[in-house]
Image (cartoon, rainbow, N blue to C red; front, side):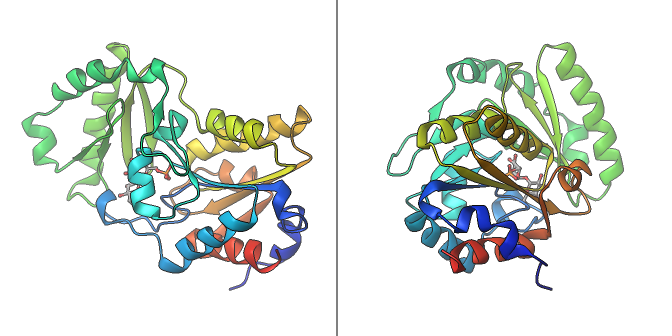
Length: 268
Ligand SMILES: O=P(O)(O)OC[C@H]1O[C@H](O[C@H]2O[C@H](CO)[C@@H](O)[C@H](O)[C@H]2O)[C@H](O)[C@@H](O)[C@@H]1O
């Protein structure tokens, strides 16, 4: 079903694409949620649209919880930037290696050592999947035989991680063990806006970490760095309720966000 007043909602960008930036989350926004992270795919039409937009807009970037190189591998679009690890690293268009925040990098060994101690028979019996992202390690329980049991086990693991001095974060059926330093999509979005200096920026996302990016846009407008901002909330059964409450435009799932990209391309 087409989203009502979509053209109107994105008009602040489409009226002058050269002065506008587009930021998108990946999983749940560009790529449908699937059982295993390695099975995720960005539909060809969505990737083509991003490629198109990269030529017309001041800046297009993906801002993801994945490693930046994995994000680029998944989206497969050159000419756009990839902020990875929820904003802790950036892989710029045309570059081969991402830049990782030193404060995060220095924790990689300690995160690895701690999470190695979590590898035990219960974790295996529950079929929890471990995603090693370097300084962040994720524990996924989507579609395991006993999701409730796995979730409960991971709650105790999170408690142990906090007691050991690590930060923990809950996403869509995933627990992350992180360095106890500031990691936020807000910083990545802020840095990119201040580098490129667009007049208007759009951010689309579906999960808790995307609320940080919404907040970054709020602050950039309040400080006068942006004239306007469009926050697109991608609604799902699992996402936080604030993603809808704090959005200027709400769309349903990846199909809904694909329509936003179509509209951004159509009018420019
Ligand atoms: O910020 P994002 O680009 O949305 O990344 C968030 C996390 O996405 C991935 O996990 C999620 O998607 C998986 C594939 O659909 C799904 O199986 C899992 O349950 C979701 O939590 C990715 O694996 C994580 O590293 C990202 O942090």
